[in-house]
Length: 390
Image (tube, rainbow, N blue to C red; front, side, top):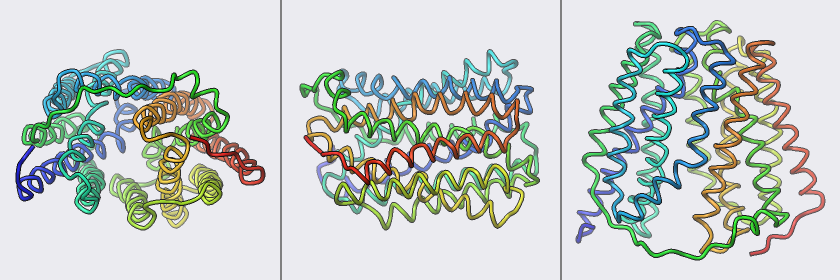
């Protein structure tokens, strides 16, 4: 690691540049993948299954890359390797034909990029130490990259058509490879902390409820994450309109992170979670049935502040409350695997089937109903309370 403060600041901004480039690619990918797959001839059910398959990489991928980095003692090397492999797969998407090949390549991209964010987080934290101001600015650079990717892709696809999706995604991945090449190398300790066995953790009632809530929130987001762009296009929006509405959600999320950095007290956490679930349920039902009304679509996207922003801050606080510091990494791994891995898989697969057989309105109604089930669970916690034991 660099010896001087100036060198550490320079290296931290190289990490921030990678966040920007990587999340720009995520903006292109996440916003228009389903639309492009539809253009390639896949049905909503097939799209849901493909996205569900990619979600499985969240179950094992981050821990796999983390273990590789830990054993080798290097971080930047494996970020470079992962994004380079993803770029090659993205190039192959340009010529790929059929659901099988497309699914295989997207799964490979999911595996290759599964550790990029967590490894770069590790690198950044090693560089900035306790300098939370620099860390926050560098991390916010990623959100700016996502907005840039969403808006850029909307403008380009409005002009060229969605058929150029794979080309644009591959080009943006090239910038991620360039940014990864500039990352400084840091060594990671091979020391291991003895963790409480997984079975013991999952038998604790408050832990079970916490992960259940995380699972329900991401299942509820299934139609949003997989089909929002497609649903908006079917509701009459152009590519620029779709990108603008995605940007509204990201900006709302950023504002939450800037204003709500930490939530103190179990009761307040549960009350905010309850609000997040109720507003998420309302959001997706409105999106399903009234997306064609621009004011409603704008307001629904602004509620992403609660769907992701508020809920994520509360989830991080629950991890701090439920686990001792020695178990934070293990708890974070479970959080990703159970919510975005298993929950993302279930949400995408189920909403894809509903979208194909009943339409987008009912797929988003499914998401809203799952969110309201989560609200019932949290309301019970607010009424009765669960102890927070380390």
